[in-house]
Structures are given as C-alpha cells and as structure tokens.
Image (tube, rainbow, N blue to C red; front, side):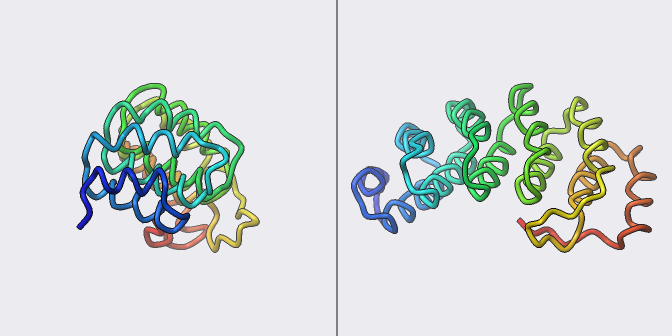
Length: 185
C-alpha cells in the first residue's frame, strides 16, 4: 500500500490511469493532507473527467469541510454529467444551506445527477428541500438517458425518507409506475 505522500505525488505527476487510482486511494485513506491536492484536481477544468470524478468521490468520502465550497462550485459548472453526478453524491457528506441550495438546483439536471442530488438531500433532512423534491417528483418524464423509470422515484422516495407525511404522494407514484428501482448508486 502506498503512503499518502506517494499517492499525492502520483496524483500530481502520474499518467491518467495512475492519477485516477491515486485519487481513489486517497479517498480510502481519509487523510486530510490529501484535501488540497484533490481540490486542485477537482477544480482543474483541463483535467480528465475520470480523474476529476475520482477526486470528487474522494473528497466526499474524506468529508473535510474545506472541500464543500469547491464541490459546490463544480456542481454549478456545465460539464460532464458523470462528474456532476459524482459531485452531487459527494455533497451528501456535507451539511448547510449552501449545500442544500446547490443540490436543489441539481434536481433540474439530467436523471442520474438529479437522482444523486435527491439521495444526498435525503441524508440532510433539511426541511427546505421538501418542496423542491415534491415538485420534482411531480414531473412525469423519463429522461432521454435511457432511464427505465421516471426520475420522480428518486425525489419521491427521498422526500418520503425526509418526512413520512409525503407517503400518500409516493403511494400514488407507485400505483402509477410500479415499485421504485433498486438503489442504482
């Protein structure tokens, strides 16, 4: 197993595959010394998307508050949907009104990012997210991404997890479309 310092060096100087593996491994270490290097990769728009995704995932797993603002800035970018999905998932590790606002905005993105945002909002249990989640769950559209279920499931079940009073709306959704999909994260 490589040390954190070796992994940081690999993240900064390795080839594409090596940088991606280094970012993932740094997330496994949960070492705060990796935060600055991971943030630098995340914010580098010229960096390969796979490396940026691995950095976002690692920052979420480490959960250091220093990563919150860079993740929020990144989810506001118009970039690869896979990166946005990874950032939405990583933001689930953080709390606060700015995080909630960023995730609520991400509910309007494509299916997989919206699903990751809804799952992250579920962890927050922030009442401000309830109405946007309910509004999003009323949207009857399957995205053109090949999703087998309308994205209303992720929002509906996240809303139900936040507050059981939303159960009636979720039951209507279930009667209309069948059971929600298994967790696809």
